[in-house]
Amino acid sequence: MTAKLPLGHVVVLVLGLTFLYLPILVLIAYSFNASALVTVWGGFSAVWYARLLHNPQVLSAALLSLEVGVAATSIAVLLGTLAAVALVRIPRFRGRFLLTGMVHAPLVVPEIITGITLLLLFVSMADALGWPRHRGYITLVLAHISFCMAYAVVTIQPRLAGADRALEEAAMDLGASPLRAFVEITLPIISPALVSAWLLGLTLSLDDLVISSFVAGPGSSTLPMVIYSKVKLGVSPDMNALASLVIMMVGIGVACAGWVMRRAEVQRLKDRQLAEQG
Amino acid sequence: MLKLNGRIETGAWTDGHTRPFAVTGGVLGAVADRLRGRWLLIVPPLLFLVVFFLVPFAFAFKISFADAVIAIPPFSHLLGSTPDGHTTLTVTFDNYKYLFTDDVYLLSYIFSLRTAFFSTIICLLMGYPIAYAIARAPRSTQTMLLLLIILPFWTSFLLRVYALQGILSEHGLLNSALLALGIIHAPLRIMHTTLAVYIGIIYSYLPFMILPLYATLEKLDGTLLEAAADLGTPPWRSFVDITLPLSLPGIIAGSLLVFIPAIGEFVIPALLGGPDSLMIGRVLWDEFFANHNWPVASAVATAFLVLLVGPIALYQYYQMKDQAAP
Image (cartoon, rainbow over the protein chains, first blue to last red):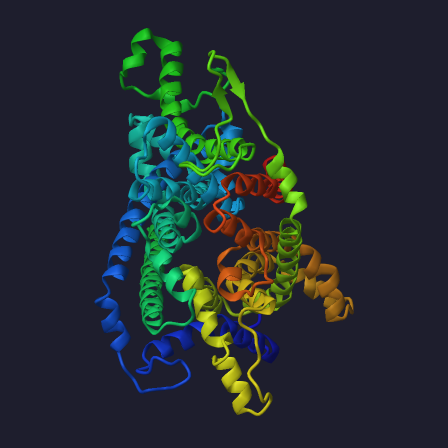
């Protein structure tokens, strides 16, 4: 490993990061433009942010998205943990092949197909069983669980496979029940993966346009659906403000998470050093 | 019947607690108890996915053989009954025939394949140098660079595609800059063209290419390259003979991560593309929301799944099997 980056590498990195970040930075700059025209710089202004916060359509859609996201990703992490434990700890069982395939399938199947098939399911169910009578919150949550769960399993499974089985066995030798051993030993070990899985699921759920558009009934628009219907017509300044808000919040969130994780890692290394010295 | 060939873990035997099933005694009780626990793990996720992932496909498959009717729901029932109580089964293959009579399906299929393929190649050509540079950076810089690559992924995909409009539109940054520099005299038309779709896909999925490439390049054994250099191999030769073959798993993983979502993409062609950017996702969307022809949409979805996702799923299945049995 070289201590200093060669010039060529620096150029590549700068170009690559510029490509990734320039559109975002331009968007944030535009969001503070007092003029409604993108071509004209009308001076610095937060007028679009103020307008955004007084837009009931955007606010209710954001609320619905949050409610769906939190519910779906929480259930998905729970189900995903069960699936990951089953796949890692039980070498052979009936339906293992089916479970493995279905857990990973949402990563491969295009969203648009998932969306269509789920809508057909809900419509057929409503036709035959009378449930779900209306498409909205419930159908959105059910639809989001499948793809959040796929990412949850993918995140949790490697961490669980890497967890030291001997610790759990030692706890059970000392009289802990398998459940207690799992909750007190393994769960804390895989908890960072659970947190990442939850955050990842929430991000994906909050961002989903395609599947939501199919399974949401009239009158229940999520935030991406509102954004899509607005930006389809072209650049709109209050969407610039909304996008900047989302990006800044995520940026701050990721930076904080990174800082916390780094501190935890440093602490862990310190503890280990102390343990080795002691 | 449950098969009892699962390996019995030591934990179940050394557990001193008395549990309900232990009443039946000894070995049998422990086995029954263990099975009860394991099915509690397996059944909830399995059941959920069967009902809300697998069964929906069966419905799409079924409806692809139905007739479009003006009703709620807008398709005919396959199963009916005659007045004298016989059950009838009405199946039509018209929807599948229709896929071949209307050019738009074949064209969009080819267009999607081509767009996804070339976007993947361009992502690879752009992503490789970036991943390589990150893998060669000092360790502390690496973490920071990786975070910067991952960060856009955590922000909204939809909003990032939207952000491109600010750059590519007629009065966007790119045209303004080129006009100001005197390179062009009239704004370039990039928005609502196929070029914009390519830029959108590459912009959105480049991080997916960089991350797996970085993962393999970072693990690359530097001593191999040193040995090659010591033996007088020119750098380009050791890149072609050592680095490139060893990073093949990353190339494949990254390419799949770009190709798979790109092929079914809806948002990018819908927001950035023009009327000629016929990607299959967009055609499906229009069939559903504009034409309200659910049976044809189901037939397109079924065909799409078989022709595109099937091979990828098979590939991944064999890949997984290979890894599982070293």
